[in-house]
Image 1 (tube, helix red, strand yellow):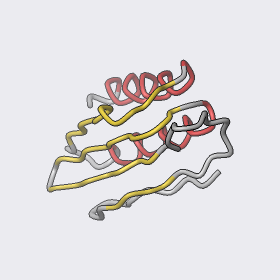
Image 2 (image 1 turned 90 degrees about the horizontal axis):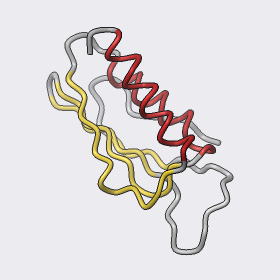
Image 3 (image 1 turned 180 degrees about the horizontal axis):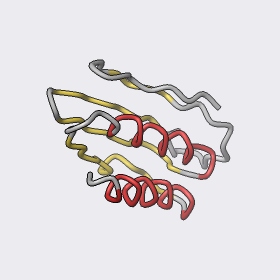
Length: 101
């Protein structure tokens, strides 16, 4: 699995090529990170499963690591998410909330 994301001050789209069982017509997960000043938006499109969950968690935590940054999650592009995929988002949110985010 490839895990990369746009760093601080960059914009980018990252394709996570996880070796996952994806049903026909379901898109692999794509993570887009858009940064503008103190705000960042992490958008997920495709299928969020156990093969991509760790990369999503890492992208959320790394994007929100900049002090004072406001993070917005856009999940409107998800085709489906497994329990493990959802857990990655919730655990990252809990960690960030504990840090005052």
